[in-house]
Every structure is written in C-alpha cells, then in structure tokens.
Length: 379
Image 1 (spheres, rainbow, N blue to C red):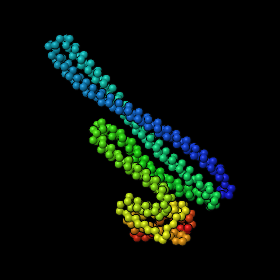
Image 2: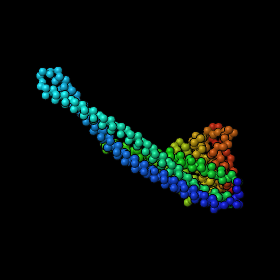
Image 3: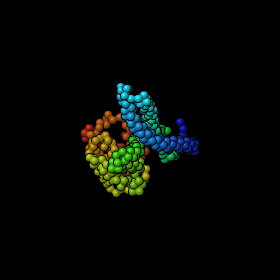
Image 4: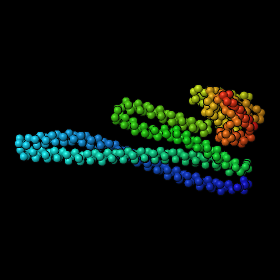
C-alpha cells in the first residue's frame, strides 16, 4: 500500500534502470550462446558431410571386398576338392589369399560401423543444436518484448499515478492488460516470423543438397518456393508492426487510418466485407483518444470475424460538438449477453479504455441476429 502523494518516483526510475540493465545483460548472453551455437552448427554440418562421404566410400570398398572374398573362398573350395591337381604352393596361396581378403573385409566393416555411429551421433547433435538455436531466438524475442514493455509502457506508470491519483489497483489492472497484449505479440512472433525464418534456415541446407543430388532445376524450384516463404514472413512482420501502431495514425488522424484499416481487413479476409462511414465534420483529437478509438474498433472487428463468423461489418463514426459516437455492427451469429463471462478479456479491455476516457459502452446482441457495439466518448 502506498500513497501517490508520497511515492518516490526517483526510486521507481532506479528500479526500472536496474531491471533494464540486468535484462540487457541477459539478452547479450543469450545472443552470444545463439551465435556460438550457430558456429558450432555450421562446423558440425561440414564435418557431417565429410563423414557421409567417408561412409559412402567405405561401403563401396566393403562391397568390392565382399565380392573378392567370395571369389577367393570359391577358389579355395575348388583347390581343396581337387587337391591332387594342385601343388602344395598353390593350395597355400589360395588359403592365404582367402584369409587375407577375410581380414580386410572384417577391418573395413568395422570401420564402416564406426563411421555410421559417428554419422548418427553428429545428426543427433545437429538436431539438438538447431533446437537450442530456435529456443535462444525465441527467448531473445521474448526479452525484446519485455524490454519494449519496460521502456515504453512502465516508465509512464509512475507519472500517471502521480498526475491522476487513481485507485491503487489501477496500475495492476493496466499492467495485466498490457502484459496480455505482450504475450499475444510474443506468440504471434514465435508462431509466425520466427518459425518461418527457422524454416528458411533448414531450407537453405535442403537447396544445397538438392543441387548436389538432383541438379540445378530442382534446386531452382526449391529456391522459388523459399522466396514465397520469405515473402510470407515479411508480410506477417508488416502486419504485426501495423497492429502495434499504424504510422498513419499520427500523420493523418483517425478517419484516414480507419479507412485504410477496413480496406486492409477486407483485402486480407476474403468473404468478409467491411464498410466505413464518417458523419459530420471530422476533426483531429488528442493522440491518446485516436489510439483508443482505433483499438476499440480493431477489437470489435477482430471479434466479429473471429467469433461472430460474420460476412459484413459496418463501422460508423458520428462527430458531435463535444463527443464522438462509434458504432461497430456485424451480421454474425451473435451471442447471448446474459451468458457471456464477465471476465472476458476482450470486453474487459474495451471497458478499461472507455473508463479511462470517461466514455460509455453499450453492447447489443442476439443469437443469429448479429452484434452492435456503441461507444460514446466525450471530447
């Protein structure tokens, strides 16, 4: 328990700075481990290629010795059966030749087994290194999210508490909401671009092997497919960046940004049509208002497509003298408001934003009749 009047903001800054320094140091250590693992991976991969070639050579030599050994044994059997036709020297020579081939074959088979075991061990270690690299990259991504969270969001918590003198649980609720957003972003990065880039790394080895084993045409086909993967990863990264904060919001304002957003949603979601309308004279409003309006509309549109299974969505802004009304309506399957869980994170998140802006929210929905969400925000 603490009072916002007496809370030491300098102490909070010191704590944040120490946390950030510690996390940055840990991030550097993880990055060093990742880079060392990559170097070990490349060295081990080259060693594996050499061992594979040695295995192939030893197998060929073993097969050749196998044939020679069989011929020598057949010669020895023939000499043994016709002992009177051959001199003692010829018999001894046939026996020694067969024995020599048998010894050489035993040696080469032992060598082949050792090389096979070494190859299998290298392949297992390579898989382990690749898993270590992927885990390190995932952890670095998570650390970056935490650093961004600490440096961009938590730095403002103390000032917000001092200026607004809100309830003591306000900070905890905001942190929980932001942490949930960061977790979602971390999952998106891990399941999207990070996985795609890991796939690109493995595909490069496949292209090299394809070129050597199947020729340049098959390798070029693999490269064309790899380009599609890289292009998809780039598209996913751009989408995540846009979700974080559309650049047009600061430059052009809320109305042009929402027009672009609904156009993008329609383009990337075939089968869903999103309509946008802004009534009366639009105006520029404070940045925190524009960001909140954008996030509210984004949350409603996402819910309509994900849960409502709608085909059409209408987004309307109505500008009044001292307020703005936002309506998001869909023709989806709807829901029963009486059975919706009170702790639904999407609804809680919207209510949090509306409460901060001193606005109101109204949600109307019926089964198979769609959903309408109305926000009224005083300016």
